[in-house]
Amino acid sequence: MRASFRLGRIAGVPIGVNWSVLVIFVLIAWALSASLFPRSYPGHSTFAYVVAGLAAAVVFFLGLLAHEVAHAVIAKRNGIEVGSITLWLFGGVSELKGEARDPGAELRIAGIGPLVSLLIGIFFGVIALLASLATGRGLLVGALSWLAGINVLLAIFNVLPAAPLDGGRLLRAVVWRATGDRTKASVVAARAGWGLGIVLIAVGIWQFFRGAGVGGLWLALIGWFLIGAAGAEERQARMGSALRGVRVADVMTPQPQTASKDMTVADFVDHHLFAYRHSALPLTEDGGRPIGLVTLDRVRGIPADQRGSTTLAEVSCRAGELVLASPDEQLTDLLPRLSECADGRALVVTDQRLVGIVSPSDISRAVQRGGMRQQMTGGRGS
Image (cartoon, rainbow, N blue to C red):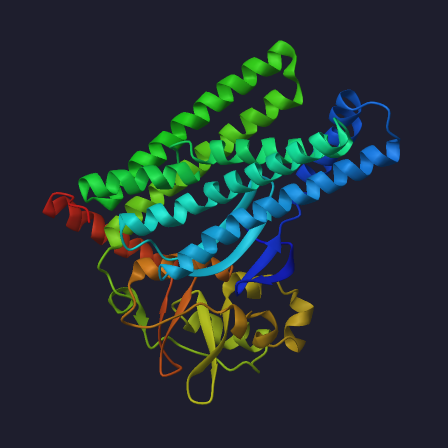
């Protein structure tokens, strides 16, 4: 999930927000200020309800952010690099660049998020109780009570034993510890996520026809998302199993053809396009230092009348977006980073000099070989 804009950094991790957050933020604020609060706590002005609804929605999303930051902090303490945290329509997601080294680390990383949400819920519950004793049942108490309830509900939902929820990670850790097979544990958690998604869709549709309206459709939408995410996790787990033990050097294309950043798109198309066997062309300078990456898709997007005045540097995946790897790095550690640049390729460097490139076709061949190797060895996991 890509961020539409950045908010800054917390604990050294970039924090981003996807535009879809605005949808759920508006829905929550509107539901609270126009329906729940006026119905439960009558007698206040429209302005008071709007302020209470907006404030509660803001604090709710801050709680989601705290949930994800907790995941990131514990992941970093367990040796996993965290690329970013992004808030979006279905909550938040922490981009972990690697996997837990053992079931214990998996338990710690997965469990801390729901624990933080539970503690936030308890905190607001205590504050709401104290406020009610001091002022009676009012709008402030209502907002605090809602925040307490929604955070406890979030904690409970997240510990359901189904991927990609935190509970799915906990289930994976338990199965992993019991069987010693990380791939099997991932598949079990993913299948549980698929099953939960089916249940949520069924319940959501049933509620919709019973008059729940948008609430039922929203539940079904969450179920649909869980099915898709669980399927992706199962595919990723099987791919990781097939590639386990494979180094970047084992699959890369060595010494790829390169080009200068100052070459025009017209020159590339007219004189070099058909001379290259690959669809991606690294840009280098200073004797081999990579500074960009051009693909045929990027070149194709330049109108013919602009190709003579457009350089490859202008259409390339820039230096800050490049995915760099070392020859001895495990391919499974590289895979999560390939989404950082839309071109899906990694440049392999030694002492800041380009020595190879890894493309989707290289990875596909490695997966096929890995699958054959597993069949020959009986499909043993690790």
